[in-house]
Image (cartoon, rainbow over all chains, first blue to last red; front, top):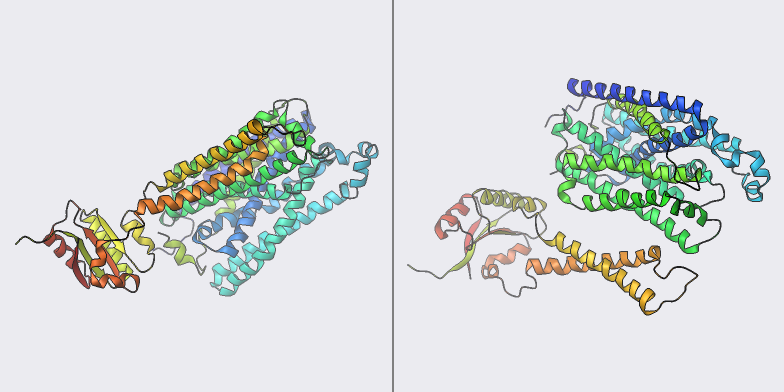
Length: 394
Length: 178
């Protein structure tokens, strides 16, 4: 078996080509978004939030899976480790892309409007947490934590590549446990700050975990698409087998079920309790046309992928698994749209051309930057103690 | 000379890898009615004997669907038809609260089908099996690995198959009495 996992010239060319295409499409879409920002700044921020949370989901989901693999081990994680590492190296870009949201806080969040808060006793009490300076401070803290975890995971991994040292493997494992706790805490609060507080009266204690489940689906779907892209070319065509894809397909299947379980738990608890401070969030989504979006999410984000991914043959098939993964990424976007958009259009279903434009723009620009990161390192961790096991996966 | 009909021929191997290699050669030579007996699970055998496809997944799926319909149907019948009580103003047919029970009965029926279906497809319980007529077969639960080619195989030929098995490098090839 060849020991050379460096990016082949042919692969470098294809990655470069895909990257520039993504940059052009994403750049053009973002230009349109900038235009949209001048025409209707409020709508721009709402659509941008959906697109931003989608891309952030891929990045942070990758961070979680990267650390999860250090704790659990397994051949599946070794073949995708470089994809995950490249994805988490884009945290600085995500911090930069957060700026429009930071600048638009006043337009996006009701609790940032002093006039509204002074007339609402509940918001007056909540303003101890929901106020602009603290919101910014927390955002800085989240990005600092994610940047620290992402760069340490990458740094130790690079050490392992250079020296083949076992201390590096140990450092990765020791970081992963506490790292996942930090991930859980920061993502929970980020979900509260950035999405849940769109309706500052509403609360759901499972919301953070629901967002994490969605991130895991996004990240794994994205990883599957990139893995299949790499598996068609040297050097990874000699590494990736149907068994690896099968493992990744099983994990995506599990995460889809996990996400569905969290979503349903939230619905069941709030629906059963039927309390005035919780149920309005669902009432908005059960009426005025929004219920069809909800139904579409149940069918196309859960039922259809669930039925398809039950099949062993589909999980081992490059093309069909990629199609499902791409489809799930689209549905992730719809799900985030469903979390955000009804807050701003309570009496009727509303869809704006910026809603698809922002995810395309952000996704394209991010993908281009991700691919440049992916090109930088060999595609397998050559000194990982479990490399042999991953390469000989039957 | 006319001899009594036999169940098949069994070859004894020292280690799992020669057994897997032998199973692969036998499949390659066209034998289909094969079985292997080992003291512990050998993962590669599924592949070597091509055991991936069977009807169990379909049975489990059907069991699960029936469990789901049964559970949901029971809930519907009790709360809507038999005992229509107003609980906290919720509709009689309240879908969200029906789902957990329907989910549980789905899992229950699917799991029970998996166990019973596995037993049925394996032909268990089986009080008698010809391979136990071979004295050394007792070692299959300790340290030896056996490959049996059954006489029901269309390619089976008492002498030819015995010679074929000898070529695979076993410790011993024995005839299995019916």
